[in-house]
Length: 331
Ligand code: DGY
Image (cartoon, rainbow, N blue to C red):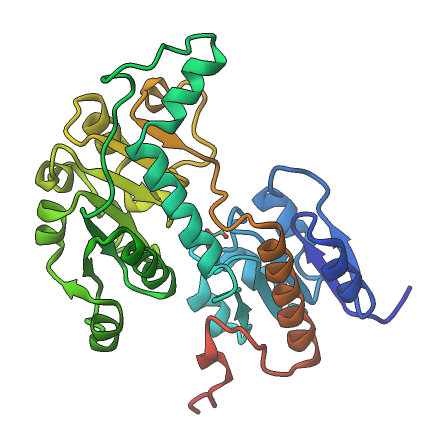
């Protein structure tokens, strides 16, 4: 027995980050590729002092309550943390860490990769070539949508939304945005125009989602929203799957209500292998990898470990999603 604090890590993380953690804590790493079930999480709770989580782990009030009072910190290896009941963690006095900033550029790069791939039919063209169907060059072969000079609509102008807007300048695009609040500095700096969501959907050739998931954002893109979009529009989603109604998206692509989509996230994940979306040529779909740059993932792991180590010592964690946990409580 050691008297080091105990930490449960719900998936293998970068070896350097793990070594840093293991120098100060007794670490158990969940060895599977699939997340631990809620039952497994509940069974671990009560004996662990730190919990390093992924966005696929259901960290609800029951898990948090079972963890206290031993549990001192939860650190999520992601910027988003909608899988964690942060309000419950705050009530139980537990800081929740995440990894903001470090994945901004990597995720923006990938949003652009999906945008370009969907517009220019890269997936479809690749599938043709691999199946031996390289058509001879022809004026109409695999023609797609031009990107340069078009209008990009960004929903959610946070760090990643701004990084996507910055890249759009290189394509001489007009950039519209919609966000819960206007950002006058960004309007100046990035030459972006604030519009209502309805106007953004009606006027954009490309719509890219960059908002946090919340109850208000649930199925924000539903059938009504798709009906407002241009028939030549492309939707890009690198945020969270449940912001888009999956049935409405499938309908919009099947009926060509919109031209195409580039989707890195889906509801549910993984997408069922027999989902009709997977039969469609006009969707490029990847398995939630927008932040998956090697260096970025290493940095995310390091930040998560820094959060855990600070939390175990009772020090303020450096990247905190619920800073109110440190405010004095009323009597
Ligand atoms: C996040 O960080 O929230 C992304 O979805 C995964 O990196």
